[in-house]
Amino acid sequence: MASRLDASVWRSIHTRIAIALGLGWMLDAFEVQIIGSVIPGIQEEFGLGSQQAVMINIVWFAGVALGALGFGNIADRFGRKRLFIATLILYSCAAVATATAPSFELFLLFRFITALGVGGEYSAVSSAIAEFMPARNRGLTNGLVMTFWALGGILASVVTIVVISTLGLGWRYTMLFGVISAGYGLLARRLIPESPRWLASRNRLAEADAVVTAITGLTSPHGYTSPPTPGTARNRLTQLWSHYRGRLLFGMTLDFSEAAGYYGLFTAMSIFVFSSATGAVPVADTVLPLYFLIANLGALLGGLAVSFMLDRLGRAPTVTASYSLAAVSMLIVAVSTVTGSPAAVLAAFTVAAFFATCAWVSAYPTFSELFPTHLRATGIGASVGVGRIGAVIGQVLLASTASILNLTSMFVLLGMFWLIGAVAGAAWWRYGIEARGQSLESLAGGRRPAPDEQPAAP
Image (cartoon, rainbow, N blue to C red):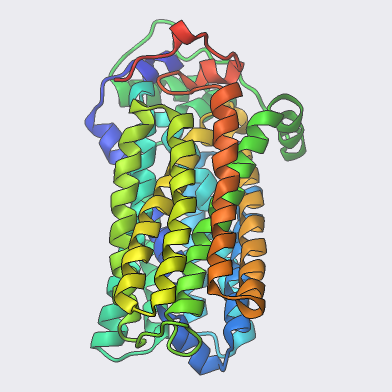
């Protein structure tokens, strides 16, 4: 039964699954963040201005949105494991094709296909990690897996430093590292079992029971008895909107806020602040990867810090505080750019990356566990899809604000994006469900626990 998953002590197989999912997430992050370090070279080769450079990100976020929604439905129909592996291979092949693109138009096409695969990973990873882990460790584990994103950013910076700054090669060689994801996809199929909760939702109860026993070491004379809940993609979206509308809107709002704010921050720094061609505080192209490396170290620390808060303070308080501090950090960056000092801007950027990562890492564990198993990947996909729309809107508004007004106004706009999530977190804190320590099955029931029923911190 599912209660065995929640009651299980932490075992080596939990560690294996978490690391395997985290490594896949890290490779996703590499594909996302490698562009920030090499965009000056892309601009130079294809003769792009700042507005055209922003188009690279707009195409990317459109692909992620479609991939998250489409592959989210597929994950609820065909399983987490299959999707995780298939999307890894899809985007790694597309990344290699991107590295060989002879024109800017083909570059955008292959980048869009890469984004489709990465969008699918959002649904697969977030669903799987929530469904495998014991209830008392779910927030911490989910947060730590999400923190592998910062490791992917660090890897992207290191690869760029070695390939471009040290070896003097072009941006295309850095993109070729995407082939690593294809090899890892073949390895991951041996490391990650299929989600037993998903198997049960498809009436494959004997298989579900075998996976639960293998993970927990616990047996049950009753086997796995959760009832199946099949449905079409359209039916799943209808169920979400009809019965879990508040949770869906909460997830969409958090993801809209963090996508517009987080990606807006990195776009602003790479194109409008640090770019040697179009930046207000320009740095050399060979130095830019080092700046992103330092910022991602700050992001790594932020992800680690917030991971421990999710199971100690609770989801809603952590989300509200993280988004609020991310908003404040945007103003710190705005003030630093006025000084014109690259060192001051880098320090502010690192602080902003810390709090921005705190915010988005707290968001995914919070809203992913609010959906029932048979709707979870679809719900996550819908939330991410709306979030990437936020990222697209953010890119357009940032470019317009920077061009029409000034950099300070641009960072104020970023702060306002983060405040949207802070308000949503505060509202959920007051009226929603606190999921800390609760089983996924009890959360699916939708009852808000009384104050004396709230779980104690582990």
